[in-house]
Length: 113
Image (cartoon, rainbow, N blue to C red; front, side, top):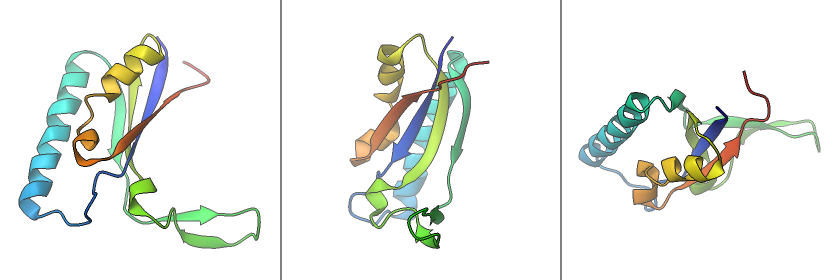
């Protein structure tokens, strides 16, 4: 079965999340991950650190990043199995980041096991 990378972007529209809100968000991700695992769709997932680096061939420098705006940064990923893009997008449509103005980029892996 094909694999798809769900790249999670944004999800913090106002830049302020209380500890209580953060716990509620985490619980949504836990439940969503568990449902994907139970359905046999989840291959892997990880939250990424907030900081990153960009290596530019243009000037050969390494700069802080990866982006100037938090809403564009990839905050994590889910690797899922799906029959096609339609199913992968249906899976992505339930991602908790969409509740907070984030987006999910869906990309099919080119090479499969």
